[in-house]
Image 1 (cartoon, rainbow, N blue to C red):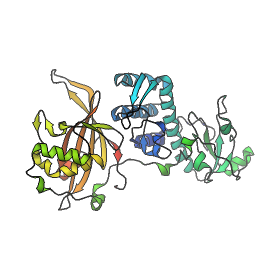
Image 2 (image 1 turned 45 degrees about the horizontal axis):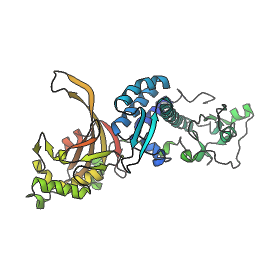
Image 3 (image 1 turned 45 degrees about the vertical axis):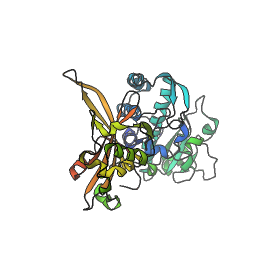
Image 4 (image 1 turned 180 degrees about the vertical axis):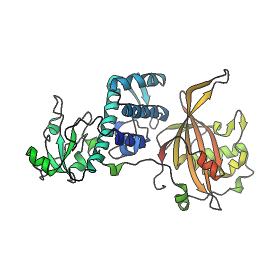
Length: 394
């Protein structure tokens, strides 16, 4: 069946599907996301902007799809990291606590990012492939047996267990950072030919603390896909114009928004993916003109705060910018995070609120809030890369 083939290149199609299906999550410490949480979201510790995290995520997908080596991937991603200030010796601030750490970002750290994500993705694909074999139900643990292989991992080399043995639920590889172990699937006749026997005895766990779960199990993968709003209509809250706010001034509307959000004007709010976003009057102005009361925004001001606090979906949209002083399009793309919260109106029609936040050089700036008042408009805005989805709505 799968024999002794190496994991790279064997199940790249399923591995790519897995890698593409992940959302994004910003983390500062490596252990902020543990175990199965990694199935739902892609993260790189100390990356504190979603646009940069997405750059890395997309580059790894391309590397996997094209079979790029680490050296090829590093050469391609390095200029992006340098441009966005995430290369070399850097002071990185935790947006949640203000903690500052100096880290070195170079080949060693990039190698770890590449190896970890590639190996986990390929083992995901391998797991699904092996579960599809009808007769090859016996799995054999294969250690790399290198000079630096962990003793505990080497001790399990050749261990054969049925694929439903609970030992795999903790010890399916990778079982630690830089682990190069893998698993092969075999039929009963193959075991007899090789004179391998099935070991039903209890074995100690060898997985490291961060890896003590079934890395391969497809059942844990939280694939992101657009919420089916037609199927979820009954679960959606109803949105109603708050006529009590119809006479509020622009300043009063903004104050209500900041109060409901629990921050001061100009403050930073950490969103659902861990992105620090500046909340100020730019959300309520366009080219210097106030728009807090435009198109009845002020009548939904309470719900706009809920949108920021608890969006149903978040998209990452990259746009080509036209240079205002030149007659050409600058394809160094503007990146915008779109927070969307869905509703039904009093007649049961699809409606939504949307917030736009732009990734600028040194911050993520809130730039606008919208009420989407027709079904086509709601669906039209649900484009680009889905990076977050609220659980419970499908």
